[in-house]
Image (cartoon, rainbow, N blue to C red):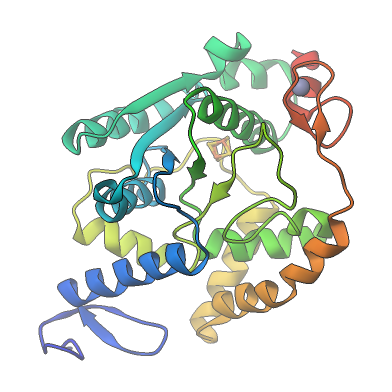
Length: 300
Ligand code: SF4
Ligand code: ZN
């Protein structure tokens, strides 16, 4: 099976059924990410970009490409990692994050639940019967935003890919949380707030499979391990269903995200009256009087 462009052994077939060899795939992937960043004006000249780094394939690829594209164009790129305190998992991925940043000469700041909240995720879960990911997600987003602000970062980049976005769109639909979908998109959020660092998703149009192939052909030393808390939940079921549909009907995930992008401007307009206030406990941005992090902390 030869590459469409140079007849070398193909490593990937695109959604348009183009067979690509290693080098042509790297070009295809990098061009698509660069186009996404420029099309949505994610990064401006002089921006300091913080990349939320977990040590996994998506955030590492995102960090690598932003450094490659923008470091020599007047931008500063750094990595921010959160140590939730997940035994035998996060410690390993953080080692990989440290090694990667050292090898590529990228500044890395690691913040942790233990330091900021006084407990690890493992400790919290021992006391409370609660979906681990719902706690983890809220606290991680909170810490990333706070750390990015402390570090005077202009934009916070995450490794979210097309699969993540398609899953989130369907999850919100199924749970009747359509107002949450208004916050999705390549640049998240509806309203600006001085305490909220805008989030960008450079890998927005890249599938999970493409990111995996890219990180493998680039031989990134990243973790493909799955968090021990990752279990049967709605996101996982939707992910499986989408993979199944994609294998039968190529382009399913892309179709969901493209249709969503068509209605996103109307959705944001509809919900723009919602105000972002300040949490009365911690002073961080919050949709209600007390933010979700402080509510979780009250339980500790
Ligand atoms: Fe956190 Fe859940 Fe991801 Fe594990 S799978 S890191 S608990 S969000
Ligand atoms: Zn709060």
